[in-house]
Amino acid sequence: MVKYSINILWSEEDKGFIATVPEFPSLSAFGETYEESLKEAQAALEGYITVLSEDGESLPEPNTVINYSGQTRIRMPRELHRHLAIESARQNMSLNSYMVSLLSMSLVLNKLERLEKENQPCYVDYEIIGSTAVGSYITQGKPVAYLGNVGIEQRVPLQLSGGGR
Image 1 (cartoon, helix red, strand yellow):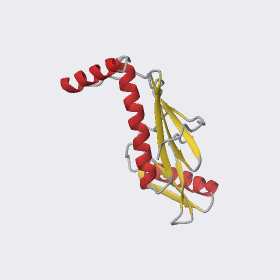
Image 2 (cartoon, rainbow, N blue to C red):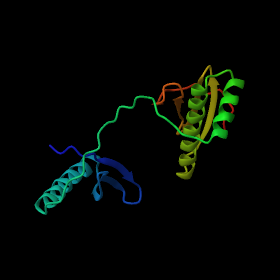
Image 3 (cartoon, rainbow, N blue to C red):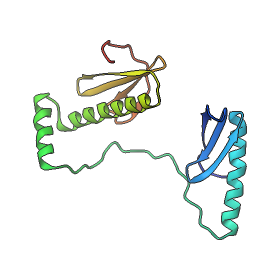
């Protein structure tokens, strides 16, 4: 059993599905249907692995699901640390909660920029509820929220609070 990832995306230009294997960037396959592109990618991957093995080449490790602890260590300039500590105290938040809120809002704004570059109609709205930054970007009529205090993307429907873009 091959344990490599296969990503399948619709290509408007090709009017079909393109399957790629992240561990082998030069490998891709086309199919008029999702299932056909998957089948073609699996066949191409098996052939590619066979050739590499016959040539004595090493195979990359398969990508796997990573479970994150929710903890990381960050180094920053002292002056930035000072400004963050002062602002978190002014907001009556812990430094950690304040930084998580800022990172969460930044993630939403970056997602918005990407969606705008892809010409998808969208806008962003965010607010701080307690120590949680809740930001949402709205695209194709589907609100999505990032909850700052859990550190992972949470896709949940939101009621819009107005504002935004």
